[in-house]
Image (cartoon, rainbow over all chains, first blue to last red; front, side, top):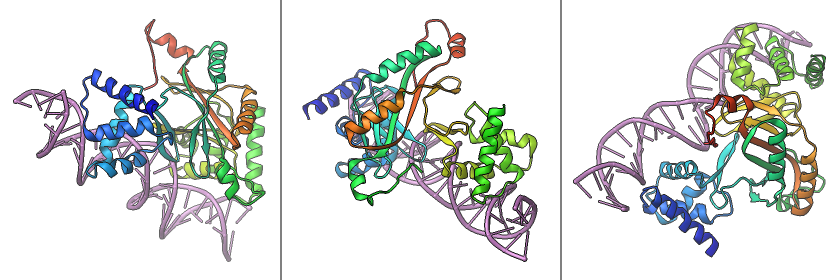
Length: 155
Length: 155
DNA sequence: GTATCTGCAAATGGTTTGCACGCTA
DNA sequence: TAGCGTGCAAACCATTTGCAGATAC
């Protein structure tokens, strides 16, 4: 909580430093992005913000997310067949476990990727500036809910 | 060439085995997917197909791609800010080097991912069924074209 | 001969944009 | 009070879908 709170203060400070205004709607979006571990979609954020500020529009949510993306303070996880999900807690590339059933996304911490990134950069001649690693599968809950020997696959 | 050709024969055989018909349009799409290393978009495929069959429609290209995706014979690389790109040569997950400048995509072969996948599956309790790894960066050509000490980043 | 495939055009759905008004700094 | 931010509605655009006619088998 204090960790998330400091992330919120961090975001607020960076916006201020660039001369951006802090409206109630913007603050609400910021705090959700700073605190949520659920990798919410724009719709998710919109629904939550409306609890406190019923007049908020989806367009404003998108505009705030776009601003933070441009500042490099939010990581966008885009999916071609679904809406994008956002990570405002750790805007640095890291692996995600994505449940193909319930669409839950959880972070996975490992440092092996930075090694791999450097190795591939050296061997390939690319100037690597980032990466994206998703592991697709069934989360423990969804494994439990599905019939015993089922054979799930990504569609 | 013979390698690509056998992949084409492979695809043709699998479609036949499932009772699907082989129209000229479908054959044209199949051969592009079987042969191209460029990870073409639907539009790319459409443009190429039109060279041989000017009457072909984009909808048909999409329908053929969708069919092959459902059969697990084509890997879709979706990007939230751009059209999807397709890999019909190696429909098994493998890392891709994506140039953020010219949008070129090249395959990268390594077996470290299957190890990592298994390790994370064990530690997380997820039943991992696949993965996606993109390395984002500047390809050698684009590094050359850009001003010396530039500081590129993903937008 | 007939079920599948095609082309066209319209629908879809997440995201973006234009504009007039409102509110932060 | 000067602009930036907001809400609304329309625009965007890749992809999907419905349907009538064409065609592979």
